[in-house]
Length: 519
Ligand code: NAD
Image 1 (cartoon, rainbow, N blue to C red):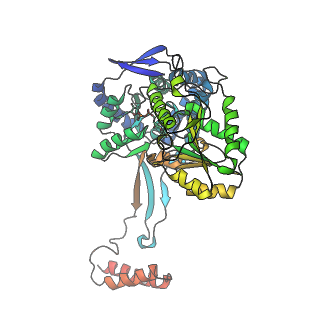
Image 2 (cartoon, protein in one colour):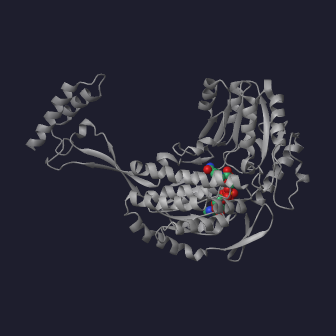
């Protein structure tokens, strides 16, 4: 669903039908200050709960969502234009899986962790505590509007933070749905607040000094947010765009690779930061593989029913970007293998772009370098493993990649050389489906990681604590220094020299200790 801001109302248009289906009240910018006050007050009691108690709320949230899976999927589908099965699998299920993972692991991950204490600090105890940061601002995009809001939200909440969410104005129905989900699950007042509106509201929220900003969206906005956050040294996680390569070697299971790459390129109409956005095929199988791709695409159905494969685009601005990229590629000599010249696109009844494969492109072209975020797949042949790696790495992005080969040693070797936050061998995108793995990008695809242990700990201050029992009057490194220099020299020689000399260590350590007693 797309929306147009009119006064203080977000008008919601279903992208698959073009109809206005709802309006959502915008949050006035003047309320931002109050939202932070509310969030800071709620933080006092929410952060005082035990992790177990907070897990109790997540359990209720999960159970409520499971009871209402169909309605939630329907809302996501209407709001985005994606087919309902994709809303269920990629938005609802992934959120439920993240909640379950957090229920299982949060207590262990966020409890104090004992750390070994070095010999020089003998007698003390060392550990790390995870202290919530305060108010976390989550700003999310429209392509997976439920998952990309909920997962950072619950990851921040479990650590004891309160959350303000600014969902995308392009999919405001999902924003409203998220607000209701937390209410129905019985979360205490103001622990979660949702600010409905566009980029002005987002900018107002970032300027009011949240304690952490978790942003998912475009590189352009990510840079604006990072610059704003830097003024107050507010820590951020930035999950940004991608132009993810798929590399198909001649020794791959080509039938599987063709199905996988087609799904990876066209699921959610290609509006996926992790989608296969450029394809490199070993020259020996190039023509055969193009034919396989063509066959796969011919079987795809575009529409809005349960049995359709590809829905519509979500946001009209995206159509313009893709149209311009395709026109420019065609004018530079690119050929369409599937799909249509943009001048024939039928967009009157919803914003559908046919799955489009193009050849006769070079790595330098805009359509291979810039994120398309649509169902467009440029294909380039390669001759050697090194060439494939070079072409794949020749990008300002580095979020995700796939490597297709039955020579697993080779595929793993290539995976290791790709400058990318995620790589999948003989499949696409699935790293994000394993919540135990870190998720994030290299280069302009982002800063930081979430999911897994780090996904919970980023929302906490990692506090280093050491405890001494306090019985001894002094420490060897404390004043006075008189006559200590040579003793320390010998102690450190014993400890850090070529071979550890424990006799020497204990001799000089005890001498220093004795001096302490005298002082
Ligand atoms: P966007 O950057 O236009 O908007 C994202 C969010 O930021 C929206 O809620 C928007 O209202 C808000 N925003 C815009 N300007 C702002 C400002 N100045 N201050 C504060 N907030 C502001 O991105 P989009 O078009 O919604 O999403 C598509 C992009 O997101 C693509 O580039 C895609 O690759 C990326 N993305 C990345 C990931 C990832 O995990 N790496 C996941 C999904 C999407």
